Length: 370
Image (tube, rainbow, N blue to C red):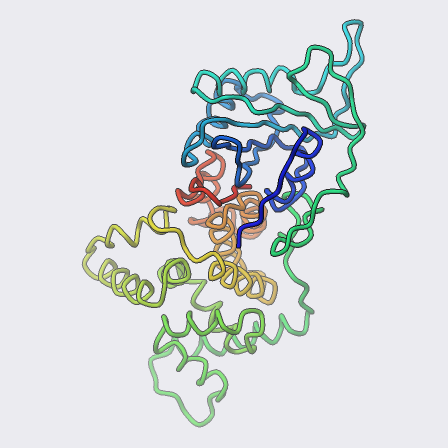
C-alpha cells in the first residue's frame, strides 16, 4: 500500500521529511528528488565541514539526485546544530554559501529548485528569501506513518548492536571452537565428539539450505547454529555466497557457491549477473528478505567472540548499504576497523561509501538513501 503525505507549505514539508527518510536528520544535507509535484524518498550527505572541495561536493550531491528515475527538480534541506548569525545586513543562515553552490550545480544540471530550507536549534528558514527569518519548528509533530514506525532518531539510530550477555558470548565461542576442530581435522567423528557440534557440522553439508534456514529463525538461532553461521561468515567465499543468496534466492546461492568453488579451483570467472548483485546492480532485491538477513547478522555479531565479529559486521554493512542505509553501514565498518583495520571487504565498502556510491536500485522510485 502506498501512503501519500501532503504538504501545503514549507513547514508542512519539513514535517514529512523524517517519514520520507525513515529518520530525523542531524548535521546533514538532505536532497529530495522530485518528479512534477511528487517526491518518494530522501538522500542524505554529511554537511561539508573542514577542508572540503565544495564544487566536488555539489557535483556528487546533484549527480546522486539526478540518477533517480524521472527526476526533474530537487529540494534541499540543511539540518545543523549551528545557529543563524545576526549581522548588520540581517540574518545569515548557516551553510548559505555551500547551499548556494549546490543549488547552482542543480540548476546547471537542468533541475528546478522546489525549496531550500535550513533547520537550526532555534527554528527554520528558507535560503531562497532575501531577508530570512527564523520560524518555530516542532519536529515532534512529524507524522508517524504505518509501516515506518518511530522516526525521531537520527540517521545513526538503530545501528547499535542488540544486547548479549557475556555468558551467551562464551557459549557461542566454545561452540565455534568445537565446530572448527571437527571441520579442520582429517579423521572421522567419534563417539566422544560433542553431538551438538556434529549436528551443526551436518547443517553445513548444504550451505545454501543452511543460509535459507537462518532467515526463518532470524535472531532466535540456537547456540551451535549461530556458531556454524559465524564459521561461514569468517570465510570470504561462504560470506559472499550468503550475501548474494540473501539478495536473490536459494538458487542464486547455489549458483554463487558453485561459481566460487570453480573460481578457487581453476580461476573460472564468476557469472556477470552474480557479480553485479554484489555491486548493487540488477533487479531490486526483496527488501523484507534483506531486513531478515540484517537481523540475523546483527545477532551474530553481538553474540560472536571479538575475533569473529568482522565477518558478520561487514555483512551487516553490506546489507545496510543494499537497503540504502549508508550511515548504518559506515557505523558497522567503524566497528570492524576497531578489530581488524585490514579486513578486505570492509575496506572496499568503506571506499565505496566514501565516494557516495549507492546500489543502482536505490535510484529507482520508492527507494531511500541515507
